[in-house]
Length: 144
Image (tube, rainbow, N blue to C red; front, side):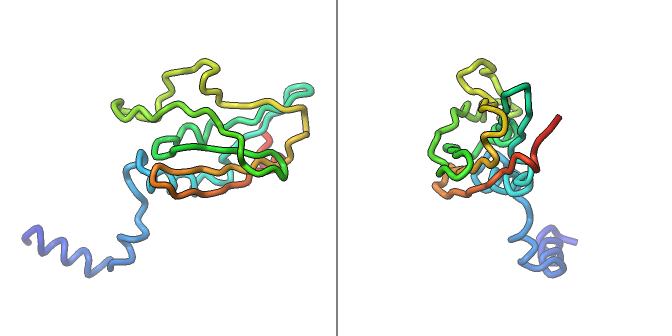
C-alpha cells in the first residue's frame, strides 16, 4: 500500500479527535510543558520537615522548565507573585532540562518555619504567553 493510502486509512480508523488529544512529543515547547505539568499536577511540589523547618521542593516543575517563561508562587492565601529563579532551558543539549548551575543561583527549594505554609499556589507562564495555576497542599505532598 502506498504511504499516502496508509495515512488516509490510519486517519479513517482513528479519526481527527485522536490527533487533537494525542500528547505533544516535544516537551521543550509550551504545549509539551503544559502536557507534562497537567500530568504531574498532583505531585508538582514536595514538602519535607526537618526539625523546625519545612523545605518546599520545586524539583518536579523545574525539571520540566523548557517551554516555560516564568514561575511565580504564593504561600497559603497569598497571590502567586514571588518569582522563582529558573535556570534556562539548554536546548543545545540532548537533555535540555539538564541542570548545569547547581549553586544557589537557581535553588530547587525554599525553606519556611515548620507548618507555616499549608498550601502553595503556582502560576506558570509559558513561552507563548499562556498561563496555568496549580495548588499544592502540604498534607497531601509531605514526604519523609
